[in-house]
Amino acid sequence: IPTSLAYIIPMMYFGRVSKAERNIPQLVFFTMGALDALAGIMQLFATNFIKSGSLLILLSQSSIPITMVISRFTLNTRYTRAQCAGALIVLVGIVVILLPTFRPNADADACHSLSCS
Image 1 (cartoon, one colour):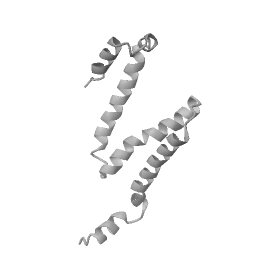
Image 2 (spheres, helix red, strand yellow):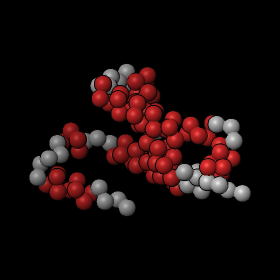
Image 3 (tube, helix red, strand yellow):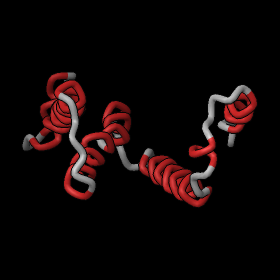
């Protein structure tokens, strides 16, 4: 639902959006919106195949460190220590969630601890 216009129009009226910002080509925003919509659709389809809800959330958050790495090499972007620490926290969370899947017989161990037959 395109609700972003609900706050852009009043901000333009009160002069909070500069002329330079209004002159940005609309194709740029369309491209970002289309790619974001595509990512949402792909995540929707992924929910059928990913068993862990926490992994599903972390999967979408993995775009943060990935984007940081890509922008570092393509745009030579510099990040603060706090930004790098945030990306590191996301990566650690992904590793913690994925760690049990790399253990052999992970399903058998989980079943044994729950006294499955």
